[in-house]
Length: 237
Image (cartoon, rainbow, N blue to C red; front, side):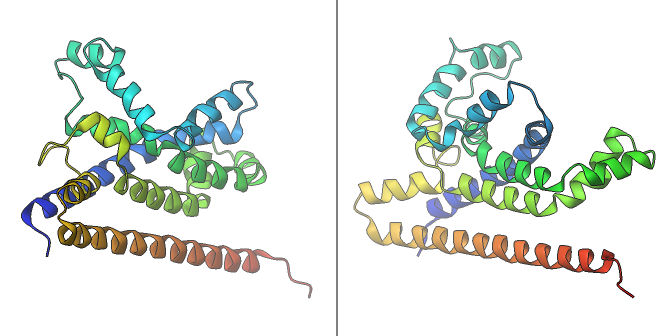
């Protein structure tokens, strides 16, 4: 059975994942659109920078973010100047770390979905008098729906499983920064294997449900797109 501390850690993890996913969808939309459409020489360096969390050890990301958010770091100086204090070992410090660590899991599905649209639908919309913003909101966003579903689920699921980054930035403060992965680690260190099993099982089930939702949503989206294309196909009669 899960104890009060386990439930507290799980709820904090779900809260963190929800906040990070919403912020990432907002941040990643213009970034993914730029990557999908630009011909700038900066595309490759920016894409590589976005993808860095995929190859860097989480502790490396956590270490440099800890320095950046500390009193001598750029982020730390900005937050202190704004009267927000320092972010390390706070919930919002975890949010910043999770935004960086989960960024490619949201940007890349959005970029792929936007690239798949092609230029033809946008050209048709432009010929009908639609402006850039109108084309984006009436053409790009609806047709990139599957990408947004994938990005949201992957961003949420990836944030659920974070350990190295959140431990480096947040430490282990109950109710503030002790997420589920850190709580499981504490149980194992204390040889409380039954408690570790209980919380780990919940995380396994939750991750499995999220992945089922992802693949089901992808299947429904492909089916609906196929029906739309079939209805739009010209008749041979």
